[in-house]
Length: 124
Length: 376
Image 1 (tube, one colour):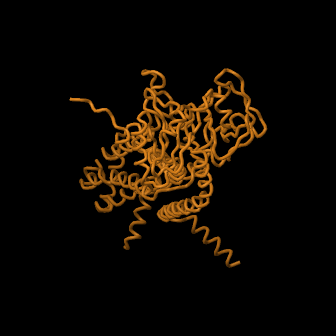
Image 2 (image 1 turned 135 degrees about the vertical axis):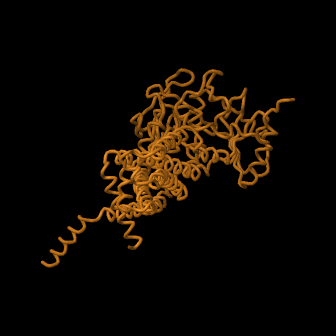
Image 3 (image 1 turned 90 degrees about the horizontal axis):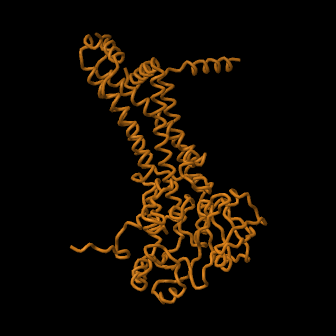
């Protein structure tokens, strides 16, 4: 009986918490959830390893080169396999018009210059 | 009075003060939370995708050799394999057959491919889970397309690729070599491109340089370049991420400017009264510090935690229409939780610190003036 009264008193005290305690409590809850999100990341990340390995095996078996994220155009489906003219489609004014083209810049492979892909220098 | 008790009293007062203008402050918290949510969602999603692409594409071919004709990718003759000859470091080389097919029935693009790891019966096809879902297909069903010669060709679905691998295989159709060549009208002695497997990663570049000299009409694509492309995809300087970031920063500047450009008459009066009843300048500044900290910390925690749930539990559902674009096939995948602690720390710093500072500055100006002047 006494314990029950104590419990009621505790509850009453809890509900009449000071605003500062309520705020600090919520912040503590926020921090706890943030820490929990990192724990969740670690656990689910570990659980996802076999799946990633299976995807990697498929990539190796089929010699895949790209993610199937954007299937709307050939140069967005295989970003890394596109040549420098795909953005123009079939003629010089056929400009890039697929929405996913606005999500990323052209892959570096098309703009980088090195010994593998020398550009013609303009003579003086 | 102990430091902690004093701060608690200040927080008490600040919360009561915020509660006197509930509409304004809740609206502020909502917009602020939304900005953090959007930024954190983009950050978590792109980091997860980049990490996964890096891990999965680690297994893609070391070198792919494409033939270029008039600046465009063209089929490569099989005798290029002989012309390459023996190159030191190359453990294996073979032609790859793949191409695209547009299915007018559902307006989707498929990637047709000839696998090397499995034998597929003539006329059979193994399809990706994305195609199976879009066309409502299962094993034993038939798919009929028009070949390049205009003839209808029926494929029998003999297998489905694992749903788990959709991120790399949603639109794949695996067929055998003879079927592929007949369907697209590709002669026996041509491939789409050539794959070279190089065991030692340090030799890859040298191999590519040799190929560029031996076959000047070809273009080597290295695995490093594939990985770099996906590492840079959705970088902050690119496309929609930049637009989002720009929008969020502008929104924040408006917030901060609104705060810093001056206080409302009501807030000035409040400060005047506080000073008149004996509050010190330092107390007023501390109180305002708590105001900035309460709003920005609440926005950070709410925004970040909601973003975490959105990306890793709801598969970033809000981004799907953006990523899908005009495509019909979109891989159903659950981003793997990979979180970069440094990114989270940066997000925390940029969402909490500037706002708190922007709240304190105008108050400092108001609180050093005479209470009588402020109250008038």
